[in-house]
Length: 482
Image (cartoon, rainbow, N blue to C red; front, side):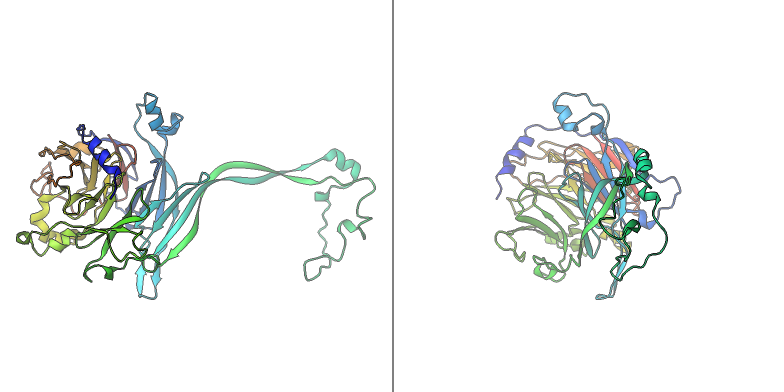
């Protein structure tokens, strides 16, 4: 279908990269020991923009917080350009708080008799223009289009008066304003002529025009202003090219995630709760009721259980930068799909296979319904996803890579580090079907502690051009670089 990905995959597979060594960069909103976290402060969405210079997070309180990168600006140019000029950069990537605004408020849907919470589900950056940032934010009902721009605050600090002319020409206008009431008409006009003169010919004094009182305006510091430019109410339910749940094969099958192709605007993919991914080409039909390709893994009848359909539900999908591959995350695994091969995934990565014996307990406490996100590096050689106990996993997906690293979202990410050597995978260029596994350990971490299902890392985002990961652990935003 697409020819551009083969060369990229083959080139990436020619050299096996070394496992990444992750280091702590920054944390925002770190909580102290014993501090209680408010529900509204928990981060529910995170996204880098296309350049990687800005990062946006949304929380359950309906707020959107923006961060901007500062280390590249300190060197007077983009980091990538400086590296091409062999500029020595020893500092790690740094971000700073930029601004925040209230995106959504709680509301009540009278049509469905349903309370709509303000929680931000998704954030998507749009193309910048004229120095302004544009982004979309969404809750369960409404999508909003925001414009964030710097504006200078202008204030009148003084009045300029030419006193030398004011003495010779009579009274100054601004000081001779009469406060006495004058008869006015209904349209706001005044029966009396200004300055007490009865006609236009007599309105100018014989000595000349009186000196004017001009305001002096000074520009103070700039401030960031966020304005909602458009609101799409009920946008999830009613729009022209809609994808309805009843277009799936079964009423029990629902759409869980959707993503446009990074380079072909006519193509999009969406996943379902049955573990399938459908690729749609809108050149065939503007109404997305049929798919051009279907990606799903054949079910093994012997392994079927009560939890099979639940854990097969895909919670997130991401296109690789070249658009050749799709990364999907279900409850137990990461799968890498080639859009030119719909027989099955080209690689499978076990995220927390050790929890399979505990599926009954996870079902009882509803943890089995947690929706973990996934992300791909800009070069397509690595992928990451979250797990429990505020841990996340990074896998290598190039030829011969054995990387399957477990890290913790804390200031010491290697505290619970697990480096699992797995058998090397074949190149993705010839498009084989490969099975790769992560760590198959017991239901405890490397320190012997049981997994904490209350602390889970659901949301994370990979920088588009560098090995920089942003992870959301409860109300804290952690950043790591390699």
